Image (cartoon, rainbow, N blue to C red; front, top):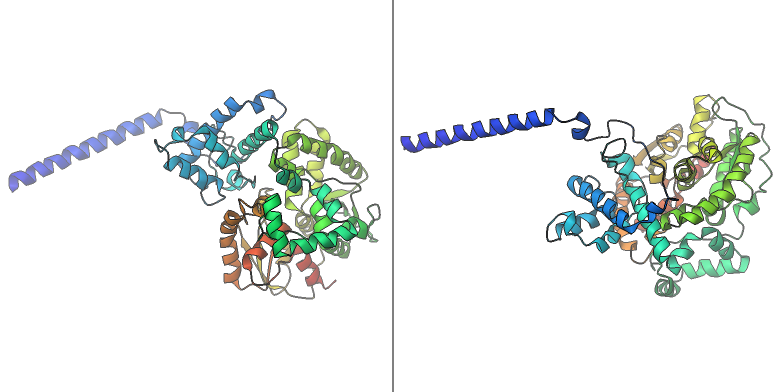
Length: 478
């Protein structure tokens, strides 16, 4: 027994010596490496490289596959983004089920299964990935997915369903014709016709689709007529706002724009609509149709520049539209001075209101408490890096508690209504719905009205979402 114990002790000593030697050797090797190579990242503010979408190399499929494999291999080794959307679980399942259990074992054609689940929410880039630039690994997962979508669109085009869903102006104008609008809205509420719509167009029968209005925001408010208030200018804001209504705000939820007009007028902010605006281009961006995005830019930027030159700030009520002008267009057109000017002059509505509050220009004469508010922070607002301005404004209302939910709703502009993705989107929104129910909130809301409607879809209890601007107007009692 003693001899055996001695052998065991000797073995332990040898083992400890080997571990100590190996550890020391690894430390020496690491210490001799450049620090940048062993730093995980996210210690500096992330930077974004311009999107080289006009270069021929951007559409080189061989080079695209090489970059997809490189980035997918980094993602496979990290797996930090697994809970964000369905792209990452899809990728990791492909790897784990491959012969090598590495990215090199995944068929190149299966890469597209990952791409199709990315709806460019940007959360992986802004909140999770430790390898974004300026890290030397230079991982920009959303823009890599965008590149892949652009290559696919240029090579194969898009389905009729995807073309229709991304043509928001055309569909809104047609569906908003007085007689047609009644038929469209009735059809969207009829189970039998929804089954037909699913079979013909691929729109899931249980997806909550937006209503259309013939009495659009532009019809309710004359574009070139400002609200009759004496604007109070601040040093951070001009107190004069041109509202980029957005296609959704114009055709689908014009009440949202009316609420904004009322709240801004109450706060001595002069508001008018942008004339003859077109879709910001975000639906076409998500489709990969970058030429259509460029056409939308050519239609919108000159109008916005004219208004800026006349002394107006720009505000848009949909986070995705604000992000389009703040981030995506400047990255697509980094040398266009007009695009960069608009980038600096456009604001999220609650960002604008908080800038007014910072200078003591926001009225706090609230008449009605809101109680407990479950506030879903929209992805495209979060990545603007402006902070939770909506929560800050609503929290000014006495006897109001605002609890934020920082998780993607899974809706995207069109992803959740598509037949093949709706059930997956319902899984993504489930944690958000659970949080709302746990809070037993008096109101639930999101800056993205489409996300709010999708949460409502998940609630399935006949409750209704309310836009934050609607809640603020209610609090003012106006």
